Image (cartoon, rainbow, N blue to C red; front, side, top):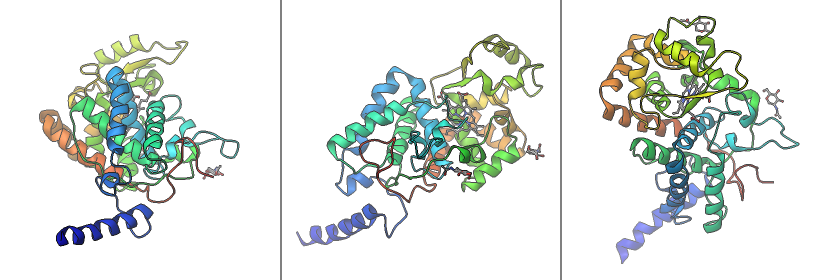
Amino acid sequence: MGARNTLQIPVILSCILLFGAILTTSLEVGYYKKCKFCPQAEDIVRGVVYKYVSKEPGLGAGLIRMFFHDCFVRGCDASILLDPTPQNSNPEKLAIPNFPSLRGFEIIDEAKAALEHVCSGIVSCADIIAFAARDAAFILGKISYDIPSGRLDGKVSNATEVLGALPAPFHNLTVVKALYAVQGLSIDDAVALSGAHSIGRSHCSSFTSRLYPTIDTTMNQGFGSFLRTQCPQNAMDDGVVPQDFVTPNKLDNQYFKNVADLKGLFFSDWSLLTSSETAKLLNDFKNDPELFKTKFAESMVKMGNIGGTQGEVRKTSCRVVNY
Ligand code: HEM
Ligand SMILES: *[C@@H]1O[C@H](CO)[C@@H](O)[C@H](O)[C@H]1NC(C)=O
Ligand SMILES: *[C@@H]1O[C@H](CO)[C@@H](O)[C@H](O)[C@H]1NC(C)=O
């Protein structure tokens, strides 16, 4: 009896501190469960993600990419989800790297609606993205990890901030490394997280500069000829190809084999071969699928710790700020 009471006091205290996010900026595994504010939160998100991703694996790729694009711009604060409004006509989601390629928004909407039904106003949209990306990694890659939560949703979303923050497919290793460093992430994190290019798709426009007028020498020439058939020059619309033609719906270490064979879609993928440090890690992941899984999970958690500590819990919809 007595022992139980003394245990509860610190738990309640830490919950009050965490919930207010006043005296702490650190996230906690099981935040919504431990504090009993919404113990079912992670299960509810998992159920919704499973429903969509088991039917359409590409949406799982979309969720993992959404987490990355959210975290690199103003931290993991769900700024990626805000819709244009008369007051803010150009939010992040309309920036070139996000529109029209980013997908999975309807999954976040449905998860938020389900959560509002059960525990209104408790679970942040930023945490929903983090949970959803984690669940997608499990469904597509059997990669399993706890993700700390307790993030808050930001009130600012500005498309002009996106281009300067996100690495682009034509960036070299120096630039990629610098953009990760700004976020407090290492080049090892960059290599591990790039393994996400073993799932999902790319639009032709993201890499056709490597195919025409000549196939880049940094690309396997046979692969380049094949990609030309998938992405004809002057096509009417922007086609799509799988990131990984070998195991397109499996989050696995096939990406590292592809890059080693010069069969990555992007110059930025190839650039991981251009330093001895990244080339060694690439080779390690290529040879050891379990090592890749472990490091990918670690780097996803690390990426999830970027910012996201200031703001609010959006009410009702993840697409609008509270007024
Ligand atoms: C140097 C860093 C990176 C660059 C330059 C880059 C670039 C891109 C580009 C251009 C696309 C194709 C978009 C399209 O045309 O549809 C893409 C897709 C994708 N990226 Fe990255 N990316 C990088 C790192 C990451 C990281 C860190 C993650 C996640 C951990 C990630 C996850 C994905 C996924 C899952 C897709 C497929 C999305 C879908 O099918 O909807 N990428 N990336
Ligand atoms: C977005 O950011 C740019 C560049 O920092 C700035 O000029 C612009 O006023 C911002 N837009 C809004 C709506 O805050
Ligand atoms: C990488 O790209 C940047 C920006 O375009 C350029 O200034 C730099 O010289 C490049 N570095 C290498 C090693 O190619």
